[in-house]
Length: 605
Image 1 (spheres, rainbow, N blue to C red):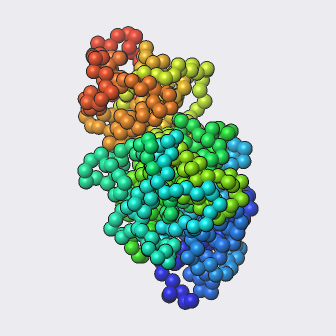
Image 2: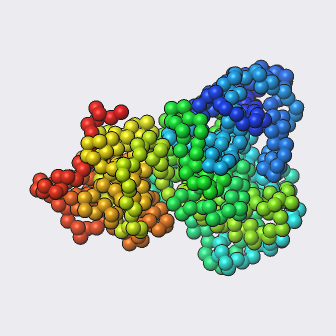
Image 3: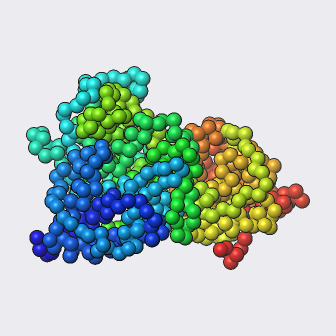
C-alpha cells in the first residue's frame, strides 16, 4: 500500500495502535520523561512523524493484537473491534527515541500495587489521568462504529424480557431506545457494527437538561444539571440488553461493573474511587494513593475513562479530516477542543453527565458484564452468576458513580496545590454540620482561571495565614477557583478559621476574587449553590436542613462582596432571618477576623 493511500484517520489509527502496543508490550521501568500528559502528547507527536515510513510496508494494527493476546479484557476488546484489519506488522522499538521508550514503560497499564498507582500522568489542569482508558476511547472513536450486538449464546441464567425486580426497582430500557446517539442494529443482524451519528449532532446535546435554553451544557459558565440518578421507579421492568456501545464499554462500563462486583465496600460516599499525591509536581514520577484499600476504579482511572469517552465520542462524529491525536489532546488539556472552552478536561464531569444518562449507563454496565460472561464463561467473578444479579450490580454501580462522582465536584487535595504541613494539632469537627458560610478572597481581584494560578493563590493564602496571622493552616474549608475545580483547605473533617465564633458550626467556602461589583463564573456559583453541598449532604457531612449565610451576616465585614451577597439572598438555602452586621462598626474582637484575602496581587508566587 502506498503512502498516498493513507488518509489522516488511517494514520491516526496507526499511531494509536503502535502506541497501545508499545504501552502494553514493554515491562514497567523508570521513565526518562516526567509522568505528565505533555509527555504523552510528545510521544504521540513523535509517532505521528514516524507512521508514514512505517506504513509504507506494514500495517500497525498487529501491535494491538499482539499486546492483547491474553486476559478477559483482551477478549472483550478484540470482540468489540473485530472489524478492524489485524495483519502482521513490525515496528522496531529501537526506531523510537529513548525518552519515548522510557515513558511507555511507566504508563503501560493501569494498576495498583500497595498504595502506588501506575499508568497515570499529571495533566495541566492538575488532575491525574490514567492513560490506558484514554487511549482505548481514542481508538474506538477513530474506528467510528460503536454499536455492537451481544452474542446470543450464554452460560448465565436466562432472564425473560420484562422481568420485574422488586428489590432494586430499576428499569433499564433497551440501549437502542435509551440512547439517541446509537443507531439501531440492522434487522438482519448482518453487521455487528453501526456507524456513528451524523457530524452535526453533538453527544453533548443529547440526554441533557441544560440550566439555560440555547446554551451548550459543556460551557464552563453554564453547567449542566445534576445527573439523573433516578433510573426507574419501584416495580418497573427491565429488559436484557442486546447491544452495547463499544466506546462506553472499553472506557468505563466494564471496569465500573467489575470493581463494584468485586469490592463494593471500597466505594466511598465522599467521592468515587480514591485520590492520591505525586512525589513532585514539576517532574512527577510516583503517585501514591491516599487510601491503602483503594478500589481499582480510582479517581485517576475515572478521569482517563471520561476523557477517553468524551474524546472518542468527538472523534466518532466529526467529519474527515480528523485532527492529529497530539493536537487533539493538546487542545483538550489546554484551552479547549476546536476553540470550545467547554470541551476540555477541567469540565469532564459536567460533559460526561451530558454524554449519557443513568439508565443508559446502567444498560452499558449490564451489557459489559454479560459480554464478559459470554466471552469467558470461567471468569472467576462472573461464573454462574444470574442476569438478575448482574443487573443489580450494574444498577448499584451506576447509582454510586452518578451520585458520588458525577454528582460531586472535582476537588484537588492539599498535596496537589503544594500545601505546607498543618502546624499544631487540628481539631475535629462534629459532623454533620448545619451551615455553609460563603466568602470571597477580595485580593487579588482577578479570579484564578487555571491550575497554576489557583495553586499559587492557595499557597500564598496559606503562607499569610500561617506566617503573618499565626494560624495553624489556611483558614477556609474549601476554595473555589474559576478553573472548574474546588481546592481543599482544611477540608471536611477539621475546624477552620474562616468565620469567627462559628468555625465549628459550618464549612467556610471562599471564591477566589473580588465580587463587590461582579459575580463569579456561573459554573463556580453552581458548585457552591448545588453541587458541593448536595455531595456533602449525601455523604453525611452536612445536614439536609443546612442553611447558607454570607460572611457579613456573622462578622462585621464587607465579605463576600455586595454583588455576590445580593445573589446569595436569592438562593433557596439562604438564611434571610440573620441580618448582616455593618462593617463600619468593627469591634476590637471582629478586627481579629481574617480580611477577605490576605496578600496583594504582587505578593503571589
